[in-house]
Length: 256
Image (cartoon, rainbow, N blue to C red; front, side, top):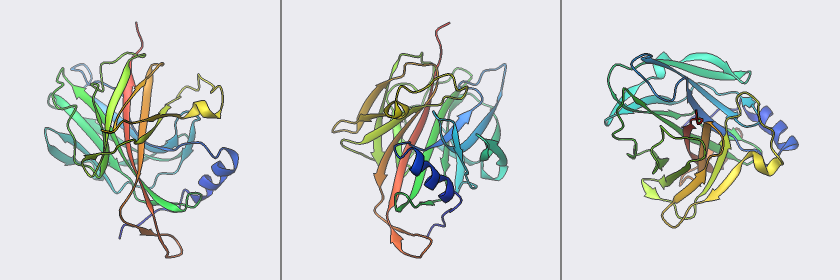
């Protein structure tokens, strides 16, 4: 049985009383969306946050953090360093890129109990970045319990492009999956027109495929939520449901 974290309970209860519709996202945000020969290292910030509102939540050390390239997985968990994102506990990884390729960074968090939803939550978060001009393999499934496989190349895009992806659960498409979309409002440049505008929502088709046009440059998060076919115990020892999240982050560049 997987352990879970209770460090988010107080923050979750507070958010529920203030803004019940706000979404939370696992985040894996690299310092650069593309690795070039001029800058061969990338810093990745791992957090659990409300990206548009800029509200952080504590992220205990993930259960797993790795990078996958050409089907080969490298464990990055031992090198994680504790840090802060949005004034809350987060983690940082410094990764040296030595060879051309497309790098899939994946975080599996420690399961945590969400009292306001009466379930445990596990969000599998993925960010894909290319190095040194390579682009093969960006559309591959990693075989995660749940994931979003991009149908638009997830790098080298401009703001205004329409991103498309396919939601998978157990490596099978999820018909009619509901996908939450949120912009990482890092510099607090934008204010939502209403609470409904903070988290956008789009439905996938019968094959689990969805599209969304990203109007601003920066990082955009896509999260598709499903129910696991197993349960975990809550702090009182009761068996409760588990929410599985497939999260993907994509960068949109400004027009120069």
